[in-house]
Image 1: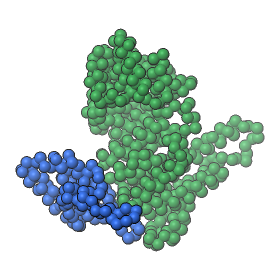
Image 2: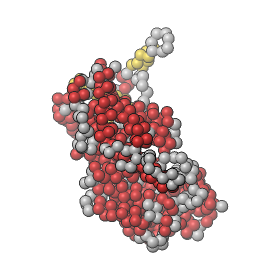
Image 3: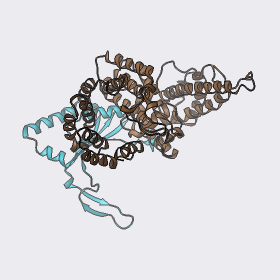
Length: 118
Length: 415
């Protein structure tokens, strides 16, 4: 089954990340790199996003033209920082990968809809 | 097997007939509970789809219940159910193009001998499902309860339970929750999830007074059965034995927990002659058996604490030092303020109310909204000869609980 792992973080997670020393930061990037290397066979498209302050949203109301606003549309405690598409046997395997994620914060796991589910 | 209706019943011998009838009903209920979970487990494994399997199993169980209540149990209830379910499964599979013809061929004429219920239990108790759905789904599919019975246990509408089950089954198939016993590195964590579901089930039944809700389904019995099943399926797991012992130690004393009017009776004031001492001894043996593994855990320790209470001849003869030490061990596994509160109560019997009050007061920040924290302080303050302070604490406790039995108890003290 295909899942999308959404790497999320709160403002506190972001602050903790910003507070890392250069050595710690390098170590963190190495761990993340190792995670991707270890699971390479099961990982499809991936991406890291710029911070939520860079977001611009287009919102459709019940009528009239869409409205463009600055900032993320979904105002939440957590923002999505990146994603990785994975192809694994089942949710337990996806959970095992997510639990091993070294980037801290939280990881949301969502199944990707396939044609036979629609 | 006995039939529920026997032509040779002597007319007029109503009592004997009633006894035979109720024994037959018990045998029927027992067989039904055993077989419904086993059937569901096998069908889910073969079809690989929870929702389709449920449909197949429901029809077979309904047919079984209707026929068995009239004709009595068949010689082999499992084989009977399997034949009906298999026929139904073939119909469903032919209708559904997604499922290939070879799945039909995979349906053996006879049910496999192995018990798949362990997989079923782990799937129903998957952490990706909300905890209340885990409980409802386990009761439905593993214990074979009807939606009406589950609704009556939780005092909610049957519609709410049906929706909860439907959402849970849909999530299992769309999200890809696997149907298997977790791998070794996940097993410990997942097993504690399963044990938490069974304990929650037990508490749901145990905490209510039968006098208040005479029609309510007693889930304590279902939890007992489920823990015993799990102990048979996982004989090497000491925590499963610990939970089974814990449940049985509580149930062995249930007759003394409420008075004639449904009021809660505190352990201290219970009539210990009404306890089931044979059941207590058997459960204490389970605790000892679990301890042989040398792998202690929170359920084993809690069972050992309850065993200390259950084996004491009176409140005053309780081995409080042993209980305090067991709470110390429990705190290593469950470092919660509520556990520390219970330890403080035991400590009051070892070192006196002064030391216990110091310990209790140190929990003020964490337990200020918890009624038992204030009720405990009230008790200790009374022992220390401070009735005015004790009263204030009891009033705080009263304002924080809506449980009728507990409120009655505090009101009695305030009167």
